[in-house]
Image (cartoon, rainbow, N blue to C red; front, side, top):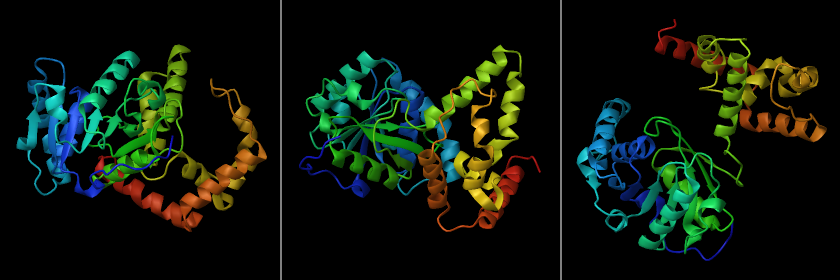
Length: 319
């Protein structure tokens, strides 16, 4: 990423109009989310019947969004279905592209969006795997292009991973992160491009192991799903895998966990190669857990986790 003189952009908390390019499941989910947050949404997709499909997606999402609580001014009537890309980006404050995962298509489309959109507007891509460095190659103003990787459905799942490419301006990454936070999203601003980003890397590791077990006849699909929904999945909504293992170390926390169970990283349980547990890696993980705990003791975290797991069990009818 690069640092250049920042263009004058609309303040992240003053954005009023958002453009969604691509109206499939992800693009439609983005449109529904932005409408529920009170934005005016202009949408375009090359499919001739996309308007009908998009309105269907928005209507299907609206009951859940209504239950969660709509922002002031939220109205499905704020959706404008546009006939051309140029019309969709006219007067917009932000663009979210959600085209299919095809690198050449992404390159061409981002270049077209770039050419049609005012230079100060940040352009974000919903790609789930391509680095922005590979997608921004044909853009005349690549400095304002970022990845804003959501999770399906984007109108309910709060996480968005934001990262720029080699030709992205630092201020564009900062602006996109600030805007998405102002829009109510939980944002991870990544320090650098990582293949598959963060959450997808972890998700794919679990998926890969599941496929190995099914292929080897070691577990059924139902057993695998239940192993998560009735097991660690009950903890993960509140504390991710790092803090989960921090607590597994008892009062010694992650330090005890790594020192005591570190050799098991090389066990034959997994089909994935394990990293070497160097002193540097050990310390980085231990310190990361301490930072994330932010002063909370192991007892504090245990009590917090248990309260939240009980609440989740009741909410999901398991207790």
